[in-house]
Image (cartoon, rainbow, N blue to C red):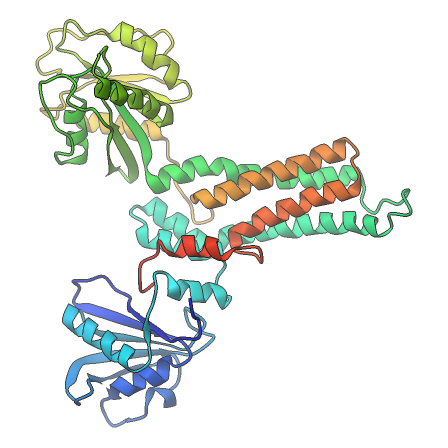
Length: 465
């Protein structure tokens, strides 16, 4: 990206009554002045006006014809979102008007912004660090109160401050050890008591470990709690999926083996996002394609947090106990809910063997087709998810890149502690400390952040942000 250019883009979604065109860069004010004329008695140009003012006027094309009545907000460096001179043109939300304004800006010296370029400039100009920049995208994509709150916490710097505190402690430890290296010809000198070093490293390990463990919760909040819907063929798995998501996402048929691949969809239940996974029915089959689908079923069970085992309560030949031997071993450490479906036509309720099932296993009778007890099933799902209330001070890792960097930092600090316990030379311990610092720096965008990393992050942003 060429940060010397002045960029522009529509910063609002299409179809609204009002649209905003954002302009940022060295010539943002000058270029906007070329197409904008203020109304009223004060004819001062934008360049002559104070920052943080809003001016009413008109956008004119090259022929002097009015394009639209607008409001222009003025921001001056470094006190703007990007840290550069910026304007925001609020006009009517017509796609035609927005494109006319963009074309006029480009004809007068702007270029179209690339995805995430405004936020990237904010990062490069020191308005935020990399973890805060990533939180901007999470905030835009937030769909629940919990995801919104976590994104806001991160964007406001709570996560960055936690990492900064860790960095300060690590720098102190590194400084003490490297001071010893400067006097390596005096082997008897120790500037850092090894017990105190280990205690400090232990505190750092505790914090990093807590952040690493929080990713499981953060990933569930951000991407949805994975719920695998499993069972025999024709147990009603696809019917249940359709009932839970409120639309026909999966084909429903009386023919066995209809679902041969994994079908996923998300739904918000009582503020918690669930990612439901409809899987191929489990049975003995010689069909190669269906067999592949069943193999994927078992894989999805291992990846799920919650397993909904659907049993056809109207099927007298249901092989529940036989199936339990296959499902139970995969449910260790997971929440299992046994769902007896077709309760509206069942003459009896088959019971799955309890042997080997998780202690937290719950069961319920429903009719996915009639909607009987679906609300009760949804409440069981919410209880099984166990998503806690997120406060404004909670720090929960939701980003896979952050998790991977923290996991490596955790390995580093554990090597530090092991090195201290084994009385390794100071230079070896200091290297592990530097590695730990480096991995934490990857999160906030330290000097080792590569251009490839930045490109990968910002390509997922929307244009105009």
